[in-house]
Amino acid sequence: MLRIDPCFSPLVRLTTIIIFLLVLFDFCFTGIYCWSSEAKAVEQEQRNKLESLFFVPGHDLLVGTCGTGLPNGRIRLWSINDGQLKKVLDLDDWATSLAISNDGSLIVVGLLKNKEIRCYSLKEKTWVWKVTRVGEGIVCCPMRFTPDDMRMVVVGATSIVTYDAKTGAILQRQEDSKSFSGGFPNYRTRQNTLSPTARYAAFWQGDIAAHEALWPPKNIWVLVHDIEAGKIVARQGKIQKKYKNWSAAFTPDERNLLLGSMDGHVRIWSIAEQKVIREWRAYQREDPVSFRESVGRPSPIHSMIFSPDGRRFATIGRLKEGFAIRIWDYPASKLIHEFPSVAWGMGLEMCTGYPMAFGPDGKSFALEQKGNLCLYDTQTWQEKWCVPSWAERVESR
Image 1 (cartoon, rainbow, N blue to C red):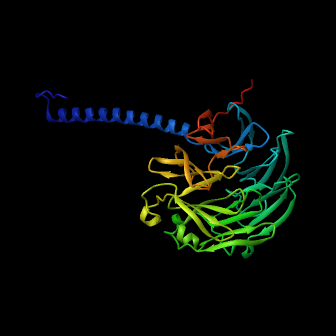
Image 2: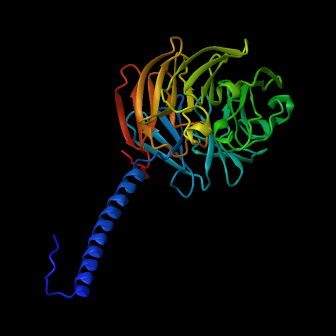
Image 3: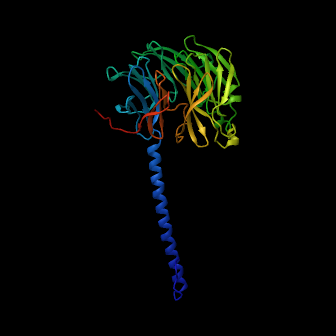
């Protein structure tokens, strides 16, 4: 305790106390600042850096696009065997979409600043073509190869474009109109996904709850467009108003569409019957669905992916403890495994996507969690390896 000599004048006493308090404040402030800086450094190190993640068929490789915290985007390739970083492709641009050919020979990436689509050959180890993208809305828009790897389909905000996978030449272009979008206004929140064969595209309005406080939702449809036939094959009116869908994924047989909703439910929507045929709550959280009532803290399912055999699928959503990835048995609608607290949540509200992927044979599952890229055995869910996803150096052995 500070002791003041009684012979000191009141002014000296006051001055001494003020100096003591200032020193104490400076000490506390410095400690808090150092602790906060260290905590921020740890958080930055553990923050996810990947924006997408894919297995390369026919190769013992994982491919991911990186951009968060970097001046430009990059494509990185890791060995499935031990997680060794094998190659880094600097893009001098932001990678916003990526697709791998079914034979694993080509990587196609959509770029933001230069408005380009580029194709890289893993066999020739070089970029084989690049074209200026057609239409708007390359950010978070899906692209996928057809089963024969001869064509590549890109779905944007205003058009669906089919490219020659070998040359990048445009083979077909469908403009955004009532023919495939059902007359959706071009809201920036409209989202879409492609089926495994790139024959079908599904459309819905994303982030619907976050914007209902600003204007009443008008994009209240979920619909499926047959790209080859150029027509809508399924639609359900006002489904968004009822379920407030956030993410979606086609089943591998392309008969059903999984809907990940704002209330934490998974809903299976039959394309043939055009109705929800099964549903269950995948994420238990007490927040209400309404954006107004929840003060901007809804509980959506942000992303969904299937295993190649269609028996399992993965979801990511928010729990009270943070974002968690859950693995489900599709036929039984049963929870198989959970990866808790995998992300800080940065960027999850921007796109329906998360860096996670099932291996081509379904025996492996890869994901990024807090700055680390990890591979798991899907039979035992034991970790095979885990490496920093932000490492820059390519090691050679």
